[in-house]
Image (cartoon, rainbow, N blue to C red; front, side):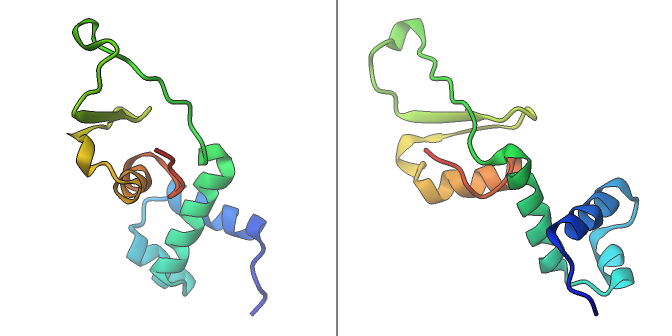
Length: 108
């Protein structure tokens, strides 16, 4: 079997995302492992510019200049996550970013 190039994988990912099959069916039909498809889907999001995003810091008029006890993350797709600042470790923020916003590279 010929080794697939990154360009080949972009086509595979596009076929999956543009199709109607679920992940299991798609992978079985093409003799792919689900984890391999997931890897290339994540990588294609990162390659498409999902590495860094602009961050806007907003302060309420009543708390301007003061530190707050919560962190709110709102992704462009509308997902909103609010958590206590103590829970917002780099690992938690990265996992949330991967789940709702893009690749696994999320900076705090």
